[in-house]
Image 1 (tube, rainbow, N blue to C red):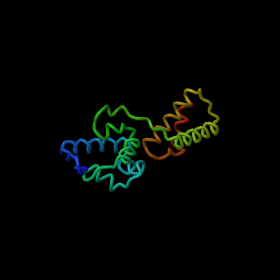
Image 2 (tube, rainbow, N blue to C red):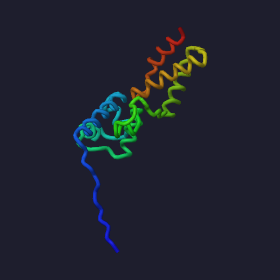
Image 3 (cartoon, rainbow, N blue to C red):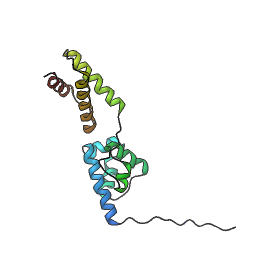
Image 4 (cartoon, rainbow, N blue to C red):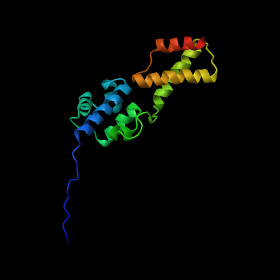
Length: 152
């Protein structure tokens, strides 16, 4: 019987690989609207996020997936730089979408505003995309303004 030895095959990262990951982290953080939004959306602390961005530590696989989803980026691109960063994976937050639809419909009803389904869908999509970029719901004043513009 032979004894098997475990040899770590961990290859140290080259400096350019670390720099490249830091650059991709900066892009991901900007896509979400800043480090605070990214930390909240990815479920990590801002201090941990800063360490990853600085190259002082690396995210776990599950954290990397949450970061990519929060930014709407491919996990493969964020981890390796391979592929197109614009080939974003669409992650739809159904609760947020539902909230946007309900709030927008209430404003339409209050204003007795009746739009063609296509126009209404575009307006709801705009509000939802804004919500996802900002990481917080649009206030009623902004939704009101959008509804006013849609009525023109």
